[in-house]
Length: 180
Image (cartoon, rainbow, N blue to C red; front, side):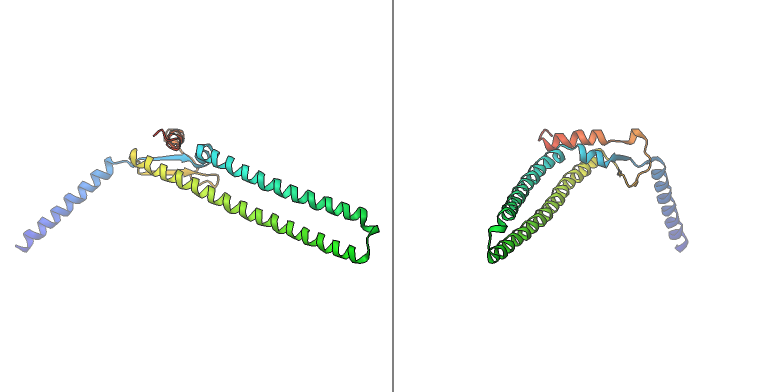
């Protein structure tokens, strides 16, 4: 009786193993790749986000330019009138100019930090949108793996027939524009 159960178990394991082997033999994983840089760079959402960000940067730079010009003009005026000022007036004016220079420096540093932070947030939002769409694209097309090429070389070569970048980019832009 025990031998019969053992034989059934061995036959079941053999059949299961054979089934897995046959499945693996005929099931070739569907693997494609995307040129990651091109996808993000040509994505309409990236282009629009960059335009908005560049407009903000231009406004910030304009403010910096105005403050710098005002400080420079005040320094030039001080230098022109300095010889007619008393020692106390010169000391007060130099303290004032020094404080304005420090304020300008602090403002520039603050703007640079804010610009860096906003650019990182913008790029993270874009990458979230792209990654979400690529995941949906992979599921809809029943891909097992979608690889991403990058300038650092994580995919060194891929047959052009496996490159789905243009197809994904078209769908991503349609999705962004609300057409899908």
